Amino acid sequence: MKSGTDYDVIIVGGGPAGLSAALLLGRCRRRVLVCDDGNPRNAASPMSHGVFTRDGTPPAELLRLGREQLVPYGVEVRDVHVTEAQSVERGFQVVLAGGTVLRCRRLLLATGVVDELPRIAGIEPFYGRSVWHCPYCDGWETRDQPLAAYGHGHDGAELALGLKTWTDDVILFTDGGAPPSHEHQVLLRREGIPWNEGRIARLEGSGGQLERVVLVSGEALLRRGLFFHTQPRQRSLLAQSLGCAFTRRGAVKTRTLEDTGIPGLYVAGDAARDLQFVIVAAAEGTKAALAINKSLRMEDCPAPNPPRESPFAVPEAEPAQS
Image 1 (cartoon, rainbow, N blue to C red):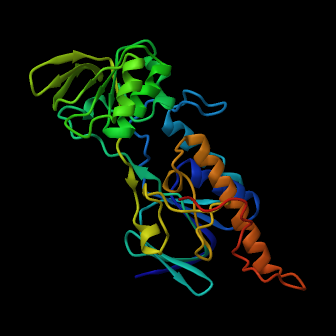
Image 2 (cartoon, helix red, strand yellow):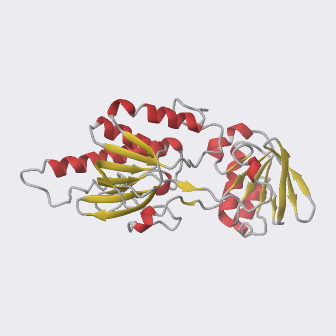
Image 3 (cartoon, rainbow, N blue to C red):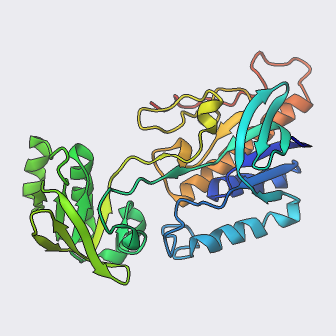
């Protein structure tokens, strides 16, 4: 394998969290490399919503602008997949696809998550157009339309109840999975939301527009949009291989400023939070960058009477996620 050059910080992932962190670290005159393999979570979405000053901007355009604004600060961006990472003396070593080995003093993982589509025949052409996972991102576009909520048990019922924010016409589909609890059934009836426990055979429609949810029984229910609840998974195994702790929902546990508790390792964005929005990911990237720069400064310019805490440490204003 080829040996590479050293960086202050390597950021794995070039989405909102990674690019936001790179921007602040570049302004702090740090030598930064962003590695991105070009598989954003929202690639199927035509527009990003709920993003301050950029509502309705295509996701690819947001990333283009983010990269463009790194240029004045000398931040390097490579379109490459990081295959391995390990802790070494005074930092980390990462291996890129193709075998290049690079070393850095701090490592930020902004690798995101992957949404698991429900296993329903015909769902792919509708994803990002009339099938979504986030009503806060796409609910406005389906307001006052007949909608389907797809999910099991507690999470499915809560999704269906939440969709009442945008429309009065909601049906919950459990697709043979766990039905709503008795308590949720009371709430669903009160809100006028029926639930259907039958297995779904397929989705039908044209041009990316959902029109019908067809059950195995042959019954077809007219719907103009479907929101689903499934548990997203980590896009990368790097956090696991580096020894990070995880929440019961599969997010990386981090502290106030995205510190993982592993010296020099930070995780920001969807990989580390249950609240997964573009604007939140960007904010977490900025928080991680602040903590990283502070730790580098403490390491380079130790105080005359050094504190007992490690230079990697950051203030802990709240407990780690559970």
